[in-house]
Amino acid sequence: MAKPLNEREIVLGILMDVIEHDVYSHIALGNTLSKYQYLDKKERAFITRVTEGTLEHMLEIDYILDQFSKVKVKKMKPVIRNILRSAVYQLKYMDSVPDSAVCNESVKLTVKKGFGPLKGFVNGVLRSTARGLGGTEYPKDPVAELSVRYSMPEWILRKWLAEYDMDTVKKILTYFQKEKPVTVRCNTSRLTLEELVQRLRTEGVTVKSHPYLPYALSIAGYDYLGGLSSFREGLFAVQDISSMLVGEIASPEEGSYIMDVCAAPGGKSLHLAEKLNGTGHVEARDLTEYKTGLIQENIDRMGLENISTVVQDAMVLDKASMEKADIVIADLPCSGLGVLGRKTDLKYKTTERRLEELALLQRNILSVVCRYVKRSGTLIYSTCTINCTENMENVQWFLKTHPDYVLGSVQDKVCSRLQDAIQEEGCLQLLPGIHDSDGFFIARLIRKGAR
Ligand SMILES: C[S@@+](CC[C@H](N)C(=O)[O-])C[C@H]1O[C@@H](n2cnc3c(N)ncnc32)[C@H](O)[C@@H]1O
Image (tube, rainbow, N blue to C red; front, side):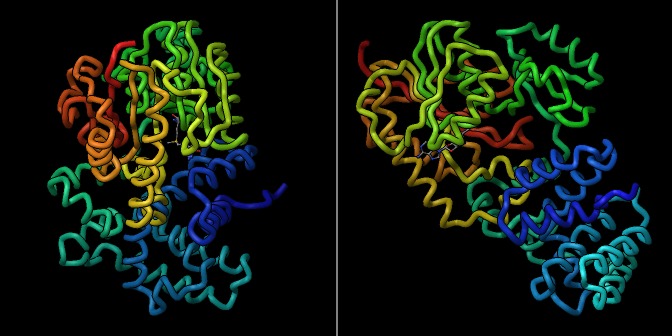
């Protein structure tokens, strides 16, 4: 029986959703892969690679297309420009696909989508691109060149170059474009790391230990997570190593009461609940029922009992929670500039204005939730971003406006390989490409006074 859609048509559908209709790429791709579960591993891998690759390299691809097409990318019909974008990605980055197949399949897709009169245009642009690709000239201006080569908007590059040297920025950009392993955290409340390694290997998964934490693994070689019984049974959680460090830096004592004020989907809350060894309690809060539902799904899968969910807007003071928590986790909404390698479309969708709004939102939330911390308790502030406005500047602002807080040391909370990430006492700034993790910031703030 003929398959209803081929892989390239599926890729086009995802690109249309992400680029033209503002859906987030990880959501569009995840939904599509679960919808087309009948596809085999190779076809699913092709869809993932072409979608992510096209998005990752989109500025460069558009720059190339503009050199070989009389009609500029911005002026093309959305369907046509996205057929061409994914085709140029295959021509430039996938040696395993013959150029002729890329051109022929793109022409067929153009016709199938009802743009028959444009098939000559698509064919012509792709054949000229295939012939001329080796001689592409990149911009002369160094920032414009970086922007095209690494498909990173110039305003983001200028922001980073104001904070980091060129060599560091290049390392960050290179890391974003590298294939990254999936990092997982062993659910130590259910089994030992050795048992998990054995179990994963019997399921055909390639497993490597991670240098930063003893209970973390890098995994590869599986089709999709839901297909692994070890995942369905909650024997591990997918979490970047940087997020696991929140649990390390919070280092709760058994019996602690922990409040995670922006908790969905619950990665850090669950890690902390595990660290409590069946004692104490974690209250995992988020804005909506839908979000707390996501946390609950993970609680059920991981099988922990010392954790519950609450719908609560972190901007609104909850008087009943004043000075109630030993630890408050404020892993706040942020620009996500540290995870651009995973959320490939975010760099095109965010703006400088949005960054400023987020920094303000973070300050507002911190001012409210810091009141839930007991005297001599801990407030952990974290973001998955690497710009100082949302990180160090917010911490400095917080200390100035909240004199009842001081920074606590993080030196003994992280391994020797991460000591260089300690930006200032009490603050850790992980940089992708410099450290083997996402870009992430963690500050450990201690409330003064005796309990
Ligand atoms: C960075 S994510 C949290 C990730 C989570 N800590 C984890 O490790 O899985 C930020 C979360 O903040 C939530 N959020 C945004 N605004 C909020 C608000 N005003 N009150 C509570 N939660 C909020 C979002 O719904 C989102 O789930």
